[in-house]
Length: 65
Image (cartoon, rainbow, N blue to C red; front, side):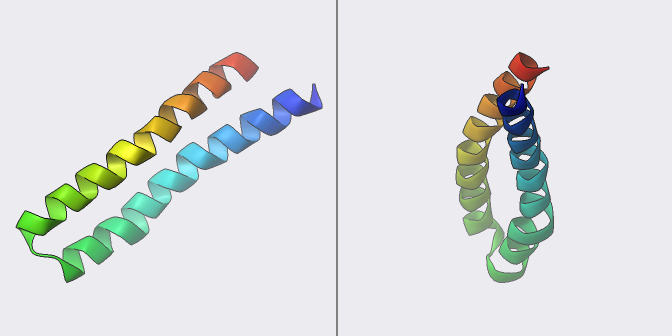
């Protein structure tokens, strides 16, 4: 039971924390430092890597209830 709770919390922190990092750190830094033609590939690459982890977190969240 304790392992399920730990996995559930880890998955939730990964999902929510990752979204906060993207919104509050990566996106503003990209807007400040990069021109629009360079910004889009960076954000697409970062989000595609992040969403692999999000899908895994969703599976873990659903499995651990």
